[in-house]
Image 1 (cartoon, rainbow, N blue to C red):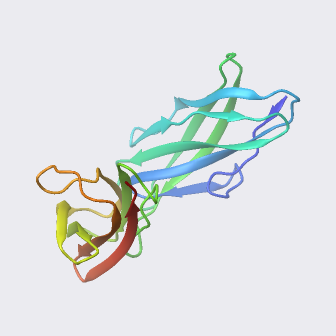
Image 2: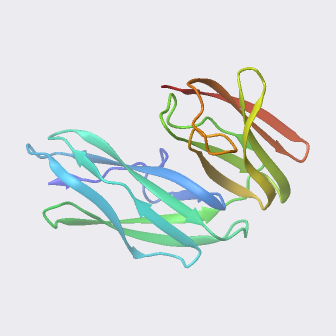
Length: 201
């Protein structure tokens, strides 16, 4: 039989998983104790709070091996400390199912951050995650290695939480840019930070 062991962000089931308002990406670690692979595992929601939405990836778990199932959890509540129970049904392509229950707690970020883009290197697009600690005007821009602005990805007022924006490797006029190193700059109130990404052509 398959054992769901488990870690979501390194937490054992039964512990509370803390999530930010906005976009959260987590992984369920699956261990297969069978001598045959378990194919096409996805997560369906059996029960969830009304303030979140979940999207599941798909994963194959090799025989007597381990794999990670990616989940995207979007949280619509900005109420610090709010809790809810998430019940998932993990299903394979044969229709076999295993239930998993996780307690979630909404926490507000303590500081703003610009996180590393993924994938990196990338072609043609990459995702740039960032965190805002409070309600503030956020501006996320892309620059080339010469310091010239290529594109503004975000320029508006946003509340506290975690966000992800996609850059498609194009400039403000919709033209594809050349391969090379690009800089992503986030300005949010008194906060400013820069990360690098490599576009391969």
